[in-house]
Length: 247
Length: 232
Image 1: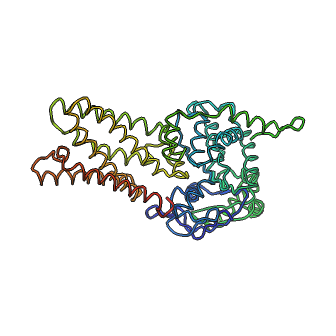
Image 2: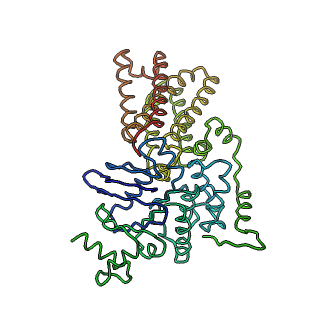
Image 3: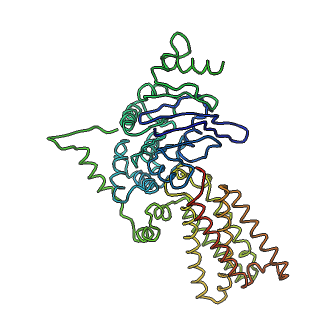
């Protein structure tokens, strides 16, 4: 198991953003669905070791990120794309990706090839020398994905990765996720259920800080059979599970 | 997002990747190579020399503060600027350790090279440059000796205090408070002891204590960064 969460909580003041999450998952593409404010981003930030849990236990890549040494080892094999990607506007795509490759401690001898591979995989080769401030929103998103995969992560956390991508790019990105999911655990937080249906092997649905459904996309779609609002089976399953959880 | 192509057994993607890696390879400059050797980390060296949101403003701020202090001291003999400089530096370092300044802060928090270590290295680098400027100024004018040792060292000590507090508390605001409080206590206590309000920056007796505080805080930061518990 690359991710093992037990009773994980995170509070901000009196608000529980994540309220007792249990989750175990191995290699594959894992979709994290839920309405705004469900706690998806907070859960991803904890798994990215950006913020600490308030309680509960977390094992990532079989290590406890609560200690400095294991945390550093996890981070070497971690890829993270935040919802709001911060970047240095004066950096080129290559400089941006290389900068994070070095901070992830990719060996010096492998950096240039790793950077070239990541930039090509997201289809930004033609813009490799372009300054980030000149890129469109979709291209910036792809540059963010490139920095996330530059270290060949075993745990890849993507928060709304397809936001800003056009339909063609989204199809290509799903293909990339499936490819990465063969070797790594890819956890994707998204509002787009069609992304989950197309690329994910497992899916969890969060509401009010808790996981209210965990299964395969087919199982989620089955939950919506005969009831639930939505135009597609997954959408009906999504709304049916949410309605049940809130009733 | 790339297709696998092959012609006559040649994997074109793989071949192109090798070409791109070579063509796109960045050759680090002399300074970056030297910094890599000293720091034993290419990531730290790169972060030290290339992060535009932090390094350039700090260098500019250092030059401005040193220049203003020199001008004020030469102009009026009043040490108010040097008296305030350590607090300004302490606040600057603590706020540099936060999401409002560094656009890639969220990403940097998930990196194997600790963001605190990056910050410490940046601080040391800025102080090093300040010290060089101070020493050069001292060589040019004997009156700059007092300015350098009465000002630069307190600034180093208070900034190190702010950094250590921010690191231990994991809060920039706590760091700012610690730096400002430390400086206020120093100024008030030296006034009580000597009767002079500006003794904190004019008394040569304080040089060693300032240096000791700076070294101790640096040790605290390094130790806390290497053995800290918790995942944030």
